Image (cartoon, rainbow, N blue to C red; front, top):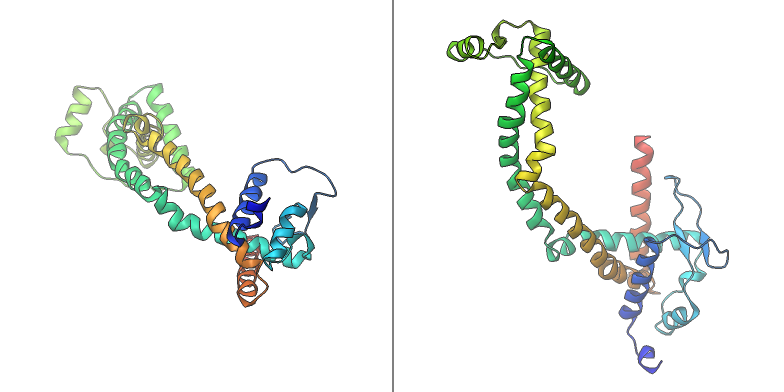
Length: 270
């Protein structure tokens, strides 16, 4: 207890932010004396209100910090908004850099071109061959291609293939000449090529080029970034918001404005 009594305000804030972060990933206990909810925001989402243990609030008061348990709903909302703002600020800047998120994103972006090229040649090429067959299979492929373009609203950009290519397609491969297709057939043929490319791009292409593994690693880095940001950025913002001075008022005001801005965005989109 002697060691704990000498703890700094920042350490107390960090301990609380870590405890609050753990509760964010667990199901809250439905006990009236442990959890209270603030009035719902315009997002129709209640900010969870968790009472701190007396041992921790006593330490906060020793450092002349506000007791969150004694706050009214508006004060608690501002305090919660400050914690969210601090977490987001660290998540987007120092947290992302320290956990290597930009480097991983760079690797993913660098792998997009090889993935797309491989998918266009393999998946798109196979889809083109099937859609140009003069049989029921080709008709089915063109039908799916038309449905895809109609769904996403993409136009079929038409260009004529060289005669040397169409001669091989007709004479050697017994395929339909795209240059002689009507608009509906050509749209189906183009849509099938797009669909084949996308399917390969999202599944086998991403696996073969290593994109899928890189995306999984990026997800893990995002989790690390969030935890780091919640403890450091959120903890610092909590400490500042609990101060009984102008700094505390400013931080709480920023937290309240953040939540109001989010509410306004959702109201405008509804």
